Length: 174
Image (cartoon, rainbow, N blue to C red; front, side, top):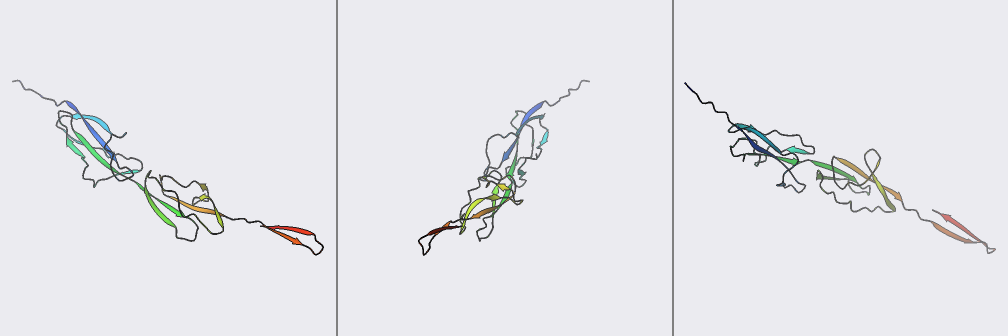
């Protein structure tokens, strides 16, 4: 008796990782995380959930395709969607108004601070929570707190005092 033994050939398939953009939409283009793999035709495959810095796997996303059967024509595609982490910027303008707590997606553009006026003072610089001088962020990669540092306006007053004998004394104060 003769028996035929068939072995399934390996077929390619793709795993695509979709990363949320800063506007909340997903880019349809390939990422550096995409994989092209092989598995036996007609076998069931399951995607690997990767740890991607500043992103979290979105298990609730209806577009996820986490497992499938490998098609003989190599058309099988698994899809995993990741949300972008959000970070908090705490801004203390030290102007007598409340501290602002703002939330932005990772790498989202942070608008410049507005309303930077404090009577009798001139804005000097920003400091972080440790007192170190920092630039106001343009994007966030982690939570951050900044406080405005002000310097008092300096005014010089000059007094010309004319004495009874006609002598002029000049005094300067700040």
